[in-house]
Image (cartoon, rainbow, N blue to C red; front, side, top):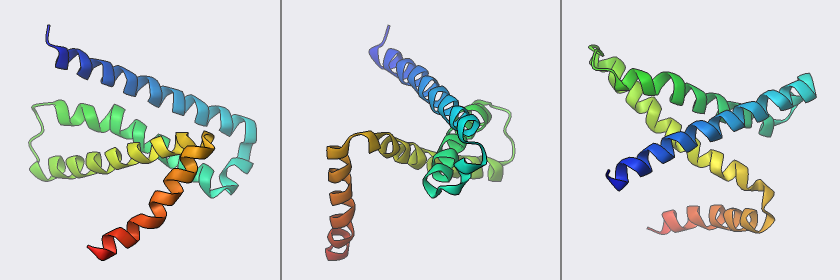
Length: 121
């Protein structure tokens, strides 16, 4: 077998595992905190990240894999939303980094100097 097929399958399985883990975490926190959960902006952002990831993985991905999608505008819209959800996945990684203070300081430093860097270009 080809190594790239094995790696692709590995990443697909890991994506399902992490999405399920984040969904279970969200459900647990909603159950534990109740309505207080929605009072924090960070919690709302976390819930949005998890829901977008679930929509991408379990709704949009199967739609784009099929051959019977005739409406090209719908296909373009789905493709655009999938690109946005990839960005959300990157943000989800940063969300998990909040446990690591040193990395959080590094990310904060990068977000501080990047606007200046792009402005100077």
